[in-house]
Image (cartoon, rainbow, N blue to C red; front, side):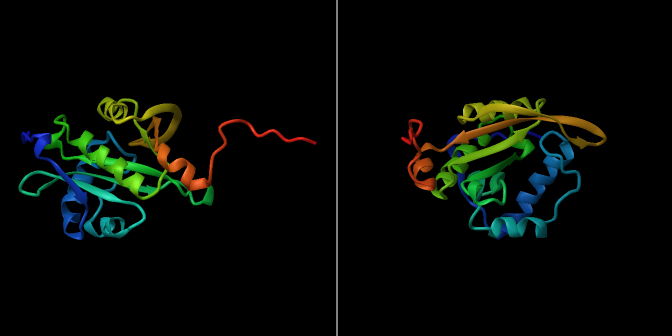
Length: 189
């Protein structure tokens, strides 16, 4: 069943612990669809609560006027090494009942703003090539496709490729690692 929503009436905010059941349901819907993640086991509310509580990696929700959660997007750690501290991976899931109505675009734009505020200089993700809606969403929100991992993982016994997408947050680049050189450094011996 499709529930019509207007993106003019969609709000975004930080996720609360009380949103965990709705976030879990939307995530499990995505897991069951087999179009957005290699995950195959449904998640529980208890699985999502630590992610909601993690202040370093924002988890945002989109809500309709009665404050029903209709989508969520979150950041997570990219790599443990210090040199990657300003890079975050993102995930985004929208309730099937409101897909194709602009909720994802509002939510991903909000997540980019949250990443900027948190000091990240890059957000990235991996998207299945057949998930054309997610790839179009990423392009619409300023992401670029930078490559493809071939046979990156198996889902239900089938090897799948993923497209790597990234978006820089330029205003955080210089502040994160000092001034980045614009020209190659010349050393005189």
